[in-house]
Image 1 (cartoon, rainbow, N blue to C red):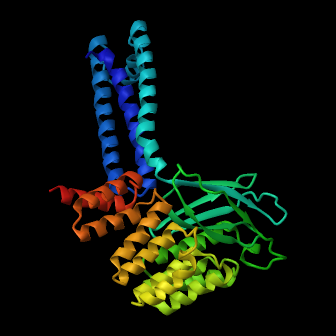
Image 2 (cartoon, rainbow, N blue to C red; image 1 turned 180 degrees about the horizontal axis):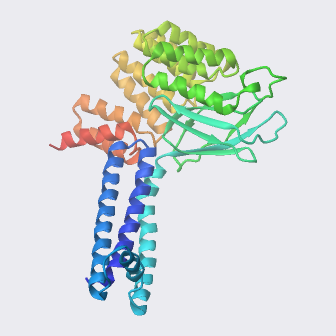
Length: 403
């Protein structure tokens, strides 16, 4: 290799660094912190090698041309290193195009599979007349993984949120002068198209309601502050913050789900059941509320009450995967391992891209002493839901089984 080859090497290193940064961004959005750290270290190392090659390139040119050292020589060398001769420049241009093509191919190989394991949710926010609401804020929250995303509608009232992990998410739409609206939806991967969400917001008459005088951004800030208290485990303060929001904005009934989760966190299971029931009073088909009630009863040691809470929805032909999974948890708590396996399997069949029920099936196989079946389920978890917590657990389990 000569000094004239170094510009192409530098271009290659730059392209590789860019790819690594893009992969790192996707990984951290998927909350894969370990893989993100490894990729960022690789990007740093690649950039360091680029710097070394650049210095070598400049030094060689200085030596070859006899240009004096100093600030002006570095400017000269920066230009000279890119102009190493007409015939060499043509080769470098071809190499740069090849590198760009390789970068695109690598991105499609590395980034696309990661993105394919996350979901996209889009939709529209409109008023009672069907006219689009521009600048509305959409928030998405998943308490199971502690994740939160936000988006803003465009001039046609459209929004899109990318990077949501598989599972049931809570959504809320808010805009100045309108009553906010909340809802929930199971999110699948990009391979299975998620239904569009349509929010129809009602105008607040006069100056009544928190959004009559306060912007949607302020409401989001209040929600974020309450969520921060929740994530820190400051249950009483979080409950007080959520209830203040609910008092100011009675239509924001989805906050009852957060209140219920916080009450479960502090061990007030009857209070949690009451909060979930408050939400059910306005949203009778809410699977999240029924799951919350069932889990509160389970955590209180009352498996029979948990089963009764889920029976109205678990027997439906279109029962949601998370409802089926929770019913499997109830059967596990009742000591009915065989029944639990059936419900975990139904949950997995309802959403093949969700690794959580498959991981439970692997654990059940291990309990039976069937290591071959367990290994197969663990491999499936990693294949279908690679950015999940269960995938990380499955990798560790597979390593232990292979010893």
